[in-house]
Amino acid sequence: MDFTEEMLDAIEHIKGRREAAYWDPQCRKYYEEQQKNTKNLSKDELEIKGRKLGIELDKRKSKDKLIKEIENYSKKG
Image (tube, rainbow, N blue to C red; front, top):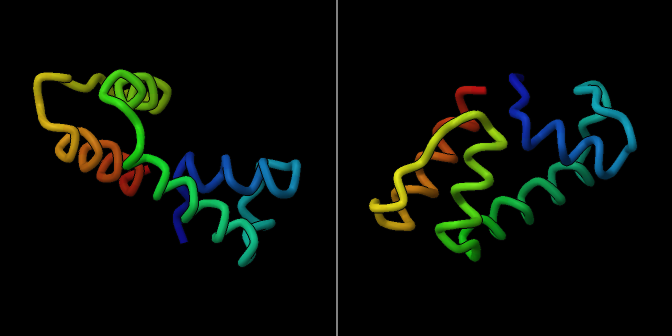
């Protein structure tokens, strides 16, 4: 299984270590909750999240398209 930065963030938040070997159902639950929260972010907040991931988002696009770009980039790792 390939781990995204967000998945590693979830492991670090729950376990205190940033190692894929610590992935468990508790980490998955936290990760899924964080993914749901992405839909509640403003375009500005999505832009900041994209920059943290290393991508530049065009805020002229719809919010749904910005979210998809972040999700697609996160899946690629």
